Each structure stands twice: as C-alpha cells, then as structure tokens.
Image 1 (cartoon, rainbow, N blue to C red):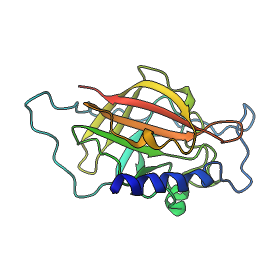
Image 2: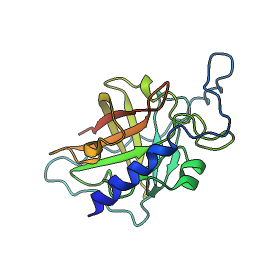
Image 3: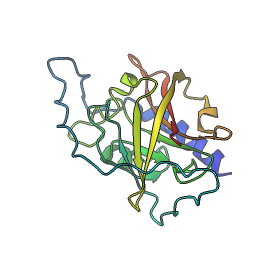
Image 4: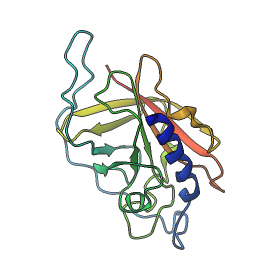
Length: 199
C-alpha cells in the first residue's frame, strides 16, 4: 500500500519537473558559481558487516545529502514527503519520496527527487542541474538525523518514462540510493542515477 502511494506521489512530481518562474538554464555566462570546497568532515561510517548490529533508527526521518561532483548539493536538508509537495520541492534541493527506503535499512531504495531547474532564489534552483555529471564510482553521502553518514557509490545511470514506477522498487539484496531529475531539453523523461551503499 505504501509503495502504491509513493507511486502516485511520484506521478504527481511529473508535472512539476521543469517548473520555474522564468528560470533560465545555465550556460557558461550565467551559471551560478559552485560553492567553495566543503569543510573537512569526519570519516563516514560504512554499512555494517554481516552479523553486526544495524544502525539505530532515528526518530526524525529528515536526511542530508552531499554530492561532491554536483556544484550545488552540499549538506542539503532533504525532507521525507510526497512527490507533489510543491512547497517542500521549492524550499529544499530535493525530497526523499515517502514510502521508499531509508539508508539504515538492510534492503532499501532510498529515493530522492529534485528539480533540474527549480525556482529562482530558492534552494531548489538548479539543484539537480548537473546530476548527469555523475559517473560510475562517484560517491554520494547521505546523513541521517542522528548524524550517521552512509556512503554510496554510483553504479548505474539511465532514463525512464515518467510512468515507469519500477524505479521505486527495492533492489533485491542491496541498499541503493536513487537520485531522480528530469531530462533535457524538454523534461519528458526522468534521469535516474543509482548508487549502492559501500560495505
């Protein structure tokens, strides 16, 4: 039932994918400057080895996302909500889709979606513009509300139709992170980047 609700919410995200209020795609002349290098952080925790205790489940489901290869995603707060929560999509770089997995779960698909263009003067503006710059082997870090970091490694990139909801499903035997935005130039498909939790 939860996955069905998540699927419906994802379809609602379809209409808002390229939503902007007169935003313009960046080029070398008008692209926002990339933020300075993030501060050095403590070494992230890795997934528990077989037989080890799983991470403590946080009471707060809010996540933080850092993607070193992407210019605008540094320690961004990612709320868990439905796919058509436009205020959350406007106020944040991305959302964690309600009904999908969490990084502390053994077998999960942690599904995070963000606008490619977004809204000017908000956290969403151009947040996932450069998602397609990610390549196999790149790292993505998710932090839970308890401060535990989970490091994922990109292994797959592809695009799907907005109605292809199988991308929400867990991947058997794996804890994966799925990042989604719209494809260019017409936002008619969804760019999907998947990363696996490093063990």
